[in-house]
Image (tube, rainbow, N blue to C red; front, side, top):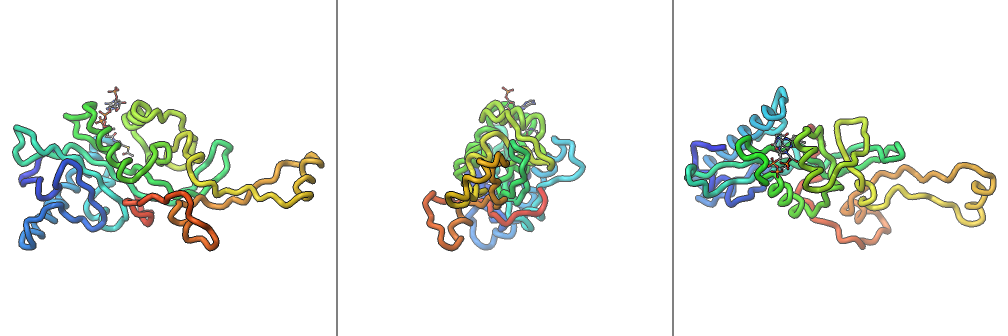
Length: 253
Ligand code: ACO
């Protein structure tokens, strides 16, 4: 995907990460900053339109304006040295963000979670099935320090489902009532927060003796490690991960 301007100062190297601040990568000096910002907006808007078209959506879910009003992160893959495209070309993009969701586990119980969500993903038509999607996805996983089975995917297309199955072995979806798809392993890798609250002995014997149903734990929301650290009396033992994609993004895809 080409643009009528040099992409190097706008997007920098191969991978460009853009957040709410829409900062271009280039360092041409303050005089050019406005131009570069406008060019970055153009790139994001055009990518959003192309993705919507590829998915048959009535309107883009990714645009510069939406990026500004959400705490999402855009990973853009650029082809810096295309011989026929001296200004460089954009290969595609991946948008992720944290969202608060109610998700069903295998047993059908509701769990409040705030996973990193795959919100939009597009590789230019001429370059699909060349491994670029995987490069981009892999870069995102490494940057976010995320396991693929811990992601929630917003309305995945058949192509994306096939992609996730092929590259990450994600095939056993846990049925949901919303548009998100999660896979086996999603809950097992979140910190254990839906605690089984067991009364002390001998009270814990009574239900079993009476043949009653097992004690059900409180439906405590899943929290990310970063949040858990803020809870009173809780130590930080699990090496909380840095999160580029902000946890505040809860508006739209
Ligand atoms: N049909 C079926 N599966 C496909 C197709 C296709 N046309 N294209 C890619 N895939 C899947 C397959 O599993 C393929 O492996 P295979 O060729 O052995 O069958 C695998 O992806 C190839 O992996 P990559 O080359 O790394 O993926 P690619 O660069 O093509 O990127 C992507 C994958 C982003 C899904 C791309 O195909 C695309 O942009 N599709 C159109 C837009 C789209 O559907 N985006 C996802 C929307 S849902 C959302 O964003 C939450």
